[in-house]
Image (tube, helix red, strand yellow):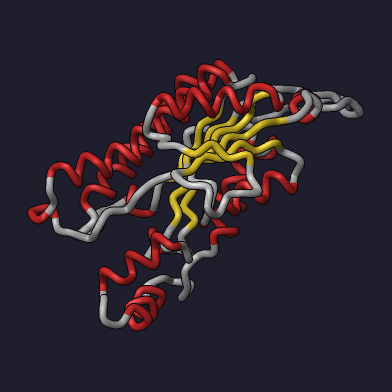
Length: 271
């Protein structure tokens, strides 16, 4: 009796003195050789922070962005990740480096801060296309080409969990990304592919600088101060704080986490 303990959560009864099977699985996952991650929007902001953390942890990283101006030290594929041809190039770039083990779909655009009745259809479809098509193509690439144990993180947004006036196209796109994430998680689970999303709140990035200016073009500093006061923690996130959450979702430590949306917003969605 003493050598067995009932696990009320999972129905397992591991014996004392033996290594639990889940520990062996994590060890095996970490010994498969060089792990390769594809990170989109990798030249700056959150994407650059993710790439830097992964490389520090020993990953091989293939980045993607529309330009190489700030990503010269990366193995960077320049192209539009909302197009299939770019993903073909990314997979080819990753193949010689090792097993594709992670995809971070971070690239996206936020839009120009117009109310829905002011939004042109071409602008609406462009915002949806960039945010949703890129996440779909990256997730599909992981399902098709990823090794067992591959993890996908889609960068959604706090706006994917609520409504935000003047950003209807962006809100629609990020809700779609969350729906894609949950569906892909169910389809990938038995294949050993995990799919999760992070939902950042306002973050100190170039895109957020543009958003701040739409609130008060004449005094961005005043708008920034007002927006930070609206956050329970009284500030914006740093790119590295968002990257830390993403890298955790890619790690073996989150091996039983899939289909979740992790809010990293200083408590904004709880307010």
